[in-house]
Image 1 (tube, rainbow, N blue to C red):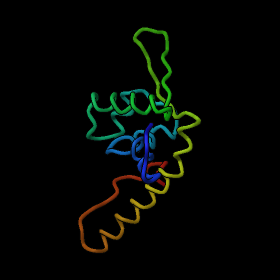
Image 2 (cartoon, rainbow, N blue to C red):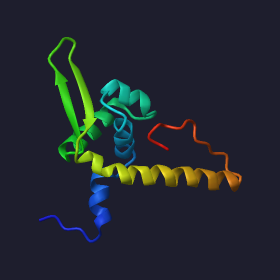
Image 3 (cartoon, rainbow, N blue to C red):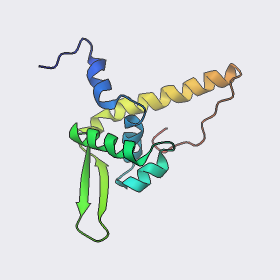
Image 4 (tube, rainbow, N blue to C red):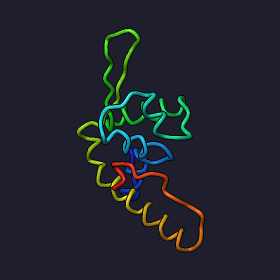
Length: 120
């Protein structure tokens, strides 16, 4: 039996780490191929991306559609269960924008490069 002391532990087990929330955020706008995800998440290696996608799929957050064609085509999408994390992701985006603004006011050279449609 898995035991948690705080609910956030269960959340972080699925959404924790550097990449998973970014993957989910990118998939909120629709299905994406692995290469599209990798381009939209600077700094993630293909190996790590595939590992994170497998974990999110195992946890039921995303699904994978395989097309029977040559060359093979695979698309990832948010599952109905995965959409339950939208509120969490939205709050993280809002907090991040506010954090950037505070740091800028304090003189730190930091900026938000672009407004992701899911980051509003």
